[in-house]
Length: 275
Length: 287
Image 1 (cartoon, rainbow over the protein chains, first blue to last red):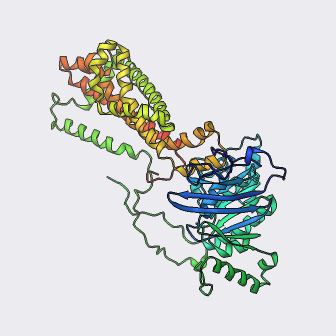
Image 2 (image 1 turned 90 degrees about the vertical axis):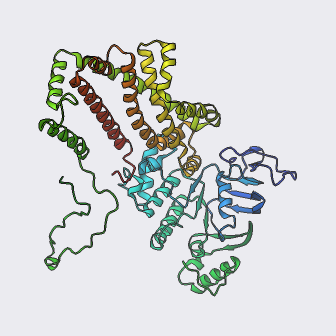
Image 3 (image 1 turned 120 degrees about the horizontal axis):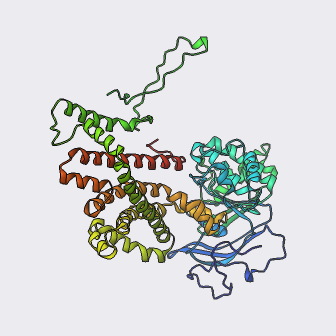
């Protein structure tokens, strides 16, 4: 277990933690490596606010090593804020709480976020210091089905291909935790289905813990072992997705879970969600 | 002028498939809003037209040689000056001044832009003075520079440097500050060190701005050169022209102008060439 990457200072998580201390974003108490094997995530009493408005109002979350958790919620419920807190990207945000994340964390954003001035291969190896970085990057690109495109510029790829490069870039680091912030949100429906299959394969092969932020109930059911519904900065519901529910044979169970989640999200279950 | 029509599209090969053999190409041609494909040497068209206009007006007697020498006279003068070595000698000195001034200006401008763009302290210290310098016409500094450095090479190179570093600084700084914050976040999530961040994100991201500044700088270097050589020099293209003025030698003056023009055009072309090579990742209207 590691302290947060990047600039976050540790404060003792005592009762004195005022909600409006800048950046106390708390870390692993005393920085002690915990006895458990790296890979687990634990979040306790996480509070984040922008201005007077609380975005996260005391969130607790655990992710076991290798577990796939989908964070489901309507826009503005704080799910991206939670992900950014786990990624250590919430500089200058007010808040408190305890966050423990593994050492190797990778992030996939909604946009592929490829450096336009670097080739596909250069983007995948970005920040890798190992001498065999290039070999590993080529292997990762093969895994996402982009072998032979190493020398291409990002603008020469389609949106789906760019997002595959982003997946390769995050997996080449062998993350213990993969954070994905609506990674398929900008893709068309057909590409999205293909990407679901690809992500499932990649996760099965590399076994990182995954936190997938999405507002798509079907995406959450299709991919996650467990679904956490966030509403108004609090955990509103937690549902486990059994493999049986995902199988096409169990249409009734699937539909029941879907309705259940939609209700938790405050959507009238009778209404079909438009995409 | 045999310029290509605005609306164009590649011709279609006849269908291989016999079933489609009779099909006509009926693709509707949409109006392309971009300027169309890039053509090699197309940039020569405008300068050539000017040259043709000059030649024709001289040949028909429309243009009095005392006002503007004929192109062939200027060519002949160039031949003579090259034969006795004066043109090369003066050109070499001018090129050296411009080159040194440009070099120092680029180094200073780029360094200041990096310092100012990457740290708040740097910005607070550097940006204000540069903006003040920018407000003062470079040539207004010449009297002071002469008092400090005399009229030798140092003053000349320094004048050019001072003219060059401002556009380099301004455009590089703007390019640097324009780098998308999302890339900065990305750099953090992949664990880039500060040095790697500068090398992989900041420098390439600021490169388009740098090249824009470089194009202004190159032109500016020649402008400053003309001024310092015509005010108080004993060598260089500007001095050669100034001397010709006292003897009423229009042909040498025009030759000097032509040399300046060619130098400007060639250097700008060179910058654009390197810009296209370095920024081949960009997809823009320029093509």
